[in-house]
Structures are given as C-alpha cells and as structure tokens.
Image (cartoon, rainbow, N blue to C red; front, side, top):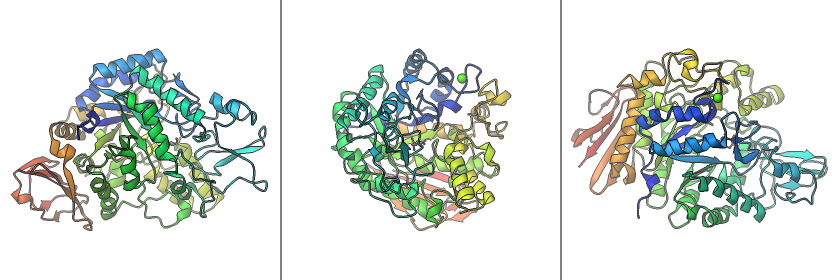
Length: 555
Ligand code: GLC
Ligand code: CA
C-alpha cells in the first residue's frame, strides 16, 4: 500500500466563531485565523478543519446553511477566504471545509421554493410526506427535541428534519440533489481546498418506508435506525467517482452509530468512498439506563468500557481502512473533564495522559482548539448561561415538559455533557477578554483564562502545549506510530489503559494510569530499550503514579 499524505497528518479543528476576533465585534473571523497561523505552525499541525463558515441564520451555529457559496458576513468575505486559504498554504498547512449536506437551512433558496408547491423545480429536493390520520408521518423524534416532522400549509405536507425545524433533510434519492451537491464540492475544490469533513454523512440514505422507531422514539433511538442506510455506499461511490477522485484531497465522514464493519466498507482502500470516519462509540458511552434521557448523563467514564469502545476499531481497520482519532470536538464536552479529571492538582498531567493515549494509536489524530492547553469544562450552574439549542431544548423537554429529571440534576448533566463547554472563546493571554477580542465576546470566556491560556502555555516548557507538540513530532518521525499493528493489553483492568504497537520487528508500549492513585502494573516495561515519552520527569518502572502516561520502545 502506498502511503497517503493524510496518514502522516495531525489535524487541528477551529471553531471559527470562538477562535479569534479581528474587527472588534466580539465574533471570531477569518482574519483572526490568519493572525494565529504562526501559533498553529509552532504546534506542528498539518491540516486545519474549520466548522461551517457559510452564510447561515445560525440556528445551529452554522450547521444550517443558507448559501453554500457565500461566506457568513460575520466571518468575512470571499476575498478574505481566498486570502486565508493562501496564507494557510503559505504556512505549509492544508485546509478542510465542513460539508453539511444531510440538510440545509430552511432559509436556503431550494427550501424556500420547495415549500411553495408540489410542482416547482425544487419540489422534490426535500423529504415531504402527506399526513397520516391527520398526524406526523411517523413517530421519529428530532435531535434537538420535538418531532422530526414539521407541517407546511402551502403544500399540506410535512417535511423531515432529523435536527431542528430550521434544518430540513435533503432528498438524496433525487439525482438532481446529488448533482447540486457535487457542484458545491467542485466549487470549493476548484478554489484549492484540501478536503472535507462531512457532517452526519451516514444519515443521508433513509430507511425504506421510513418505519416507526421503537418507543420512546427520541433521537437517540431513531439515529441507529436511520444511520448507514441502504443506498449510502452507492451515494458515496458516486460522490467519489463524480468529484473526489479528480482531486488529491482527504475526507472524513461524521458517522454516528456506525460500527467497525461499516467503516471498513466506507474507508477501505478498494471501496472508493471516504478516507476515514468519525466514529462515536467512545463519546456515546453512558451509564444512564433510562432511554428517555437519551445522551444526558454525568457519570464518569469507566476505563474498561473506554477500551472496549476504542480497541476494536484499532484492530478491525488495521490494513483494511483508516481510523480518525479524537477525544472531543465542538459537539462534546472538554476531553480532560470527560475522560480524566479537571481537578487543578492533576489537570495538566491528565491532559497529557489523554493526548498520549490517543496519539500513539493508529489513525489520523484530531486536536480540538484549546485541547492543546488542557482546557476544562466551563462548569455553568444556570440555564441562562447556555447558548446551544440542543442544551436549552433538552432542559425544557426533560425538566419542564416531561418531568423526567429535576432541574439541578439536568444542570449537572449539562455541566458534564453540554456542547457549550467546548464553544467558549479561545483564551490567548491574560489581557482583556483573554486576547480573543477587545470587545465583549459573543459567548462568555471560561473564567479560568487568567491561568489557562495560550501565552502561558507557550512560555512554559512543561505545558500541555509542548507535550502535544512532541506527540505530533513523534508521529511525523515514526512509521511505528503511524502504521504499527495494535495489540490490546489488560482489557478488563479498571485503572490502566495499555497497548502495544508492532511494526517491522519493533514494538511500542503505551501505558496510561487513568486514576489519581499509585498503581503497580507490570507490562515488561523494565526491559524496554528506551523510554520515548512520559508526563513525569523520571521513571519508576512498574509503579504508575497518578495520571502517569509513558511510551516505551523495544528494538
Ligand atoms: C453534526 C454537527 C453538529 C450539528 C449536527 C447537525 O453532528 O457536528 O454540530 O448540530 O451535525 O448538523
Ligand atoms: Ca469579528
């Protein structure tokens, strides 16, 4: 197999709204990103992925696109975009755009026309159904609460939206829809962008007949029913043939509910579909037994379950497909709070430990803005501190309407899991508004910014930032890290996450203590040829100190 550039890459995700403001309106923008390219270059990342920057009414922070070929004025103009792309390339990096084509905004001109009548050019661009006995066509619940169907008088029909009512699902069965999507993709690729992250792309092919879901048909129950539908492979192959195969680009498909067997089909070298997928097993771990609560929970992750969620992907895709590696993104709480601890005593150790555990695996690592600083959750205590519609709607639905949990419990769930934990502005330094903006930011800063910020990290050789810089450098320099085969160790052991990697007679041993206790565990580390990396200044062999994480090489 010839190696591809993206197998050597580490990707950095930018949430544009919260990265850097450059024109004094409190909203991050494209010129702000240009200003921070030297910082990203210092970190050593190869590719930047931007969350959607297209024109949008921002009902779901840009995942509701009104015009795919126009930049949101808050972020800049197309001229600014061209400048940004040029600057990214001049800094030796590449750019991935977010492609959101399971749905559009209801403000998109296709939908505006589609809803007028049953016989216009765009009538069949969305999924319209007649009422059944005066009701919704099926029982599906939408991701942001309520029914997945909304009625439109003009047509006397319902349209499907798996997400908010302002995000109608496109009808991929219609060849004209697919052709329109290919055109959007060519528009950006012809500008020179280097690939796409594809939003919920495994939801585009709906199950035949749109059958009812088992009750309670909330989104958590509906999603596996809709995911990986019957024509998905056909659509992705067509996309590849029509568009992707004509460019040297990389693609990663966001695929909630997918299993390794699905991902092998999508990312297999002979399947001609995508390069990698974002799987969800580790971020969807939940101890909450009540299906009515969907994703809402606040119990800490159990290490054996985490291993069970990640290791099968490592072994199943080896030599057959390719993994993406991520702990968090704009839809998840902060990694250090979710998977380890944000107790100030251990936060830095824990953030480095998580970085090591993930970056030594096989696949392409993604770093979400602020992760390289070990940013913790923001720990809001009141509902009015949230901006995200998912969090706010969930509170109203579960607490006020259905009385499934009490307010304080739900606030605790939000504090543990809300997407807003990841969306606070990037803390750059200790100046006013953390150097993010010189006016009040669109969303409050994490109050710990005087301590946790990029300038402090860059000035401290023992910071999480330099640990990530090292992880990235090690990957670039080592075929063992990039391509080694994964061997799971100790799957049931609750304190330590350990594994080996094997490549051309060499072995890598990775050991991470996920607890705040000393643990003694022997993986033959005393016989290693060398210690490659650690988050402690010295080595105590089989004694693993709190959140200690070590990487050894055996020649
Ligand atoms: C994806 C996005 C998320 C968005 C949803 C609907 O999961 O990452 O932010 O709300 O799709 O587009
Ligand atoms: Ca701005």
